[in-house]
Amino acid sequence: MSISGESSKSPNLRLAILILAAGEGSRLGGYPKALLKKGGESLLKRFIQSTQSFDPIETLVVTGFYSDQIEAEIKLIKQFVTNPITWVKNLQLELGQASSVRLGLESLRGDYDILMIALCDQPSIASAEIEALLGQFNQRAANQEIILPMVNGQRGNPVLFSRRLIDQILSIPGMACRPYMDERPELVKLFITDNQAYLMDVDTQADIQKLGLDPI
Image (tube, rainbow, N blue to C red; front, side, top):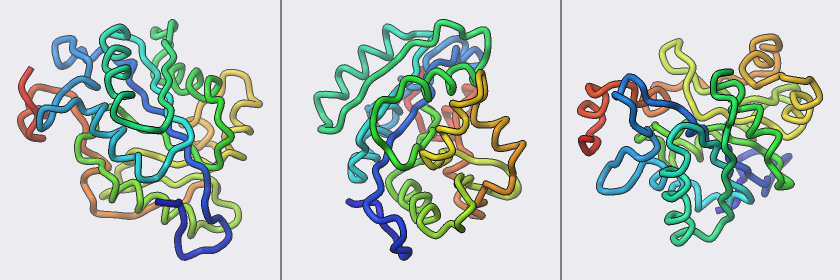
């Protein structure tokens, strides 16, 4: 599937994907969220498979806690997909998620046009949700560089960024996407939707039951 929409100004855009999978999962009792399973497959595998129809030129997973387990899963996933998947380990986890985002941005090597930054624990995100985000990107105004899903007033994920914006962020030492967005709201196109998939993630054992995941 090529990345195109009603607008003809940005057909066949090259997509890169950055997946954040460095967290400790402390509220789960210490468990890698990326390896939670639904239908017998890890959330990481399900998400990566859902992106393949968009022919991403690069998928980069940022690991941290449980890096050995997650990297082993990535190696297994690579056997089932044709697009390249790599990973990088965050050695500064004490600096929080922003450090994983920054490391991921600095580690991307593909010549992409759009970057999708995704969480590893959103079991309801599938190809339809990704396609809707890309459609919004194709319909953005000239000054809009970010597509942010917004559900009932809450920020969702994944989020799309233009390559031009990522280059601007990288030109500022230590800058990450969230603070840059907050400082420049005029660059953000809000995707107002009632699709709860953009909000659903896993923090607690109760979430595992609510989202129909295999128990750990």
